[in-house]
Image (tube, rainbow, N blue to C red; front, top):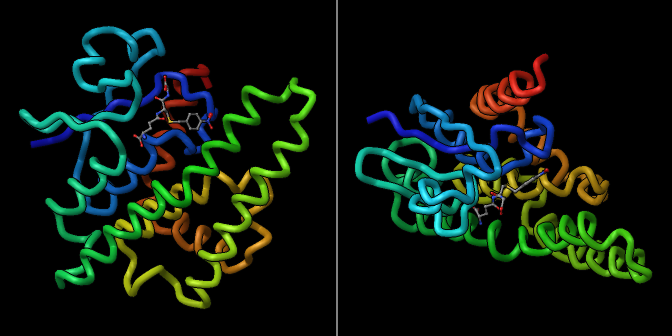
Length: 216
Ligand code: GTB
């Protein structure tokens, strides 16, 4: 059954692929699963029909027959477990790849989301610069540890997996700050992930939504 995902009708990231539907699109492209997209306005995201799908009124969601999922971690894991291509065959390798997904979402993404909150909502505060520097340092600490672990490997644990998909998606969100470039092996890791044909197809799809919404 062809799944349907939800995404912003007008993404605030202006087609830069930073909204979280991108990681779901990417996973679907990696496993060559065709999908439909339902685009939502902000009021539609907060209306009862969407709240029935997503308790927090966010995007993305994933619907496949009777199955309705929210949270990109759960969605990408479901895709990876139901189709070959994103998880290793051996049980220990699968467990480690899933662990990297959790690490991306809980250990690395947390301070990156905090940075975005600070930049969006605290820019006018007297302590903005001080707080920004603190959050930057928190992110640097995580990036340094991750950089150390990755070393000169292509991917986090053997072949590309859902763990890399999630980690690269999270790291992409911090690239605009310049912090990623302080760790050349992480910048190269993200560039390698972006060069994957599945990533490119997913990126083009979400960019087309932005162009359609802006009439260009
Ligand atoms: N933990 C959830 C998941 O992983 O699925 C988080 C989902 C989430 O935060 N969704 C956001 C949303 O729906 C869109 S992606 N926000 C509306 C709301 O919470 O009411 C977050 C996002 C938005 C904009 C940019 N940007 O402009 O660069 C990047 C990321």
